[in-house]
Image (cartoon, rainbow, N blue to C red):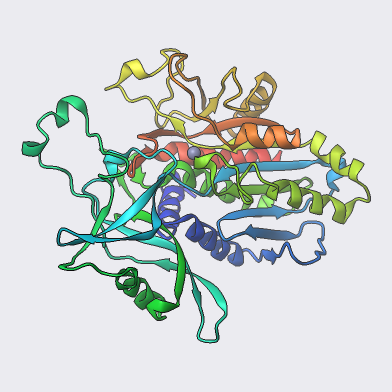
Length: 432
Ligand SMILES: [Zn+2]
């Protein structure tokens, strides 16, 4: 595929996936085309060499793997980790508030979004709802409302005279409720549940709870004089999820010697501490089950971990020349100039000299340019799932990513070539 085709496929993937639950559902559709078998954690498994499998935990974390022709005790696992969630706004349980002639929905802040970027966008809702069926059973269903339903209008400059001098600040509690409708009286929660119920083809009173994200209805696209840049929401980190799966889902990587794993987790943006997050048991549980299918004892599993490697793929901060003082002068990552290797002496990233050298070797074999990124010492550095998993499983790991402008904006941008480079080097890692 050409670089442009890779990104076109990425943008379609994101547009079909407005919540972490939809991310996993879209991936499952993709895996079905490649004849992957879905496994349930509640059942016993029978795995075969060069078999294609995946496991979903609670709708929004997924582990995809292809078993090697060698046992994991012989050659370990090759893992690419990324995350399915993005920072933003999530609906509160009692979201509905009708006052002042308007029905507004209250939101929680999920992770660290740039809140000002949510103002004046065509927003809507996606996620899952939990309800009682006509026969009184609990059920869950995905919901994706496609029209623009919600909005956070800015305050006019005449009422906020210093907005350009002091940047746009939104109070995290009182200034974030989103406008849904005109309402001239106090309305019960079920009033706005009608909207969800119509979309789900059930009755409003059947709805018990919801897990709904706010998303931007504007689709992704290309920009720039030669269309060498692209933009969408959720590039952090769906671009890395897409690159990891693209590297796995090609003919040459589906009959591997090593066992290849793509581990994609929810809850990275809030610290990964959950039953399906990277700090939970999900990856360890699945890796151990793969090992016990092919080897007899726990020592063999530990031998497998000891010779495994993980690439933690997450987006990196691209240099923006309008803000030169935000960057370490010697560690600028330029858009369309290669994949970024991230390091931090305090282990906010999992890379060390050895793992970075190994990654550079794969870049060189794949003819992919690379760049180094290090955060300024006087700014707190972000982190990834890399250190979390590396510590938990004792696996050597490197943190890498594509350069990205406006990380955690509702509209992020990156370079077409870099996504292509990332797919190539991840494919080389699986193939080496
Ligand atoms: Zn990220």
